Length: 75
Image (tube, rainbow, N blue to C red):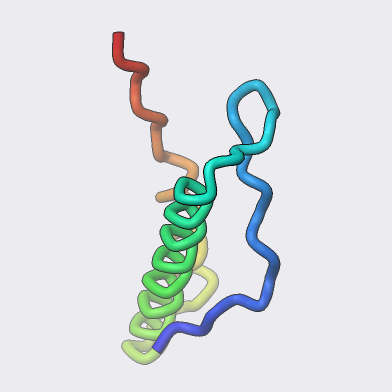
């Protein structure tokens, strides 16, 4: 029941700033973002329907994202 964003997807970049050029990688990244957007929209809707404050739910989602740690590089 989540909405699809009408925004253009980002230009995915490598750590050195160069754009990712592999179309399959770009497709996977874009699909991941769409899935996350849908899950977040569903969580927000559920919370509001259960009587929670929308701003608090959004803050919790922001904190979740901000707390993510990048995976360690494999040696």
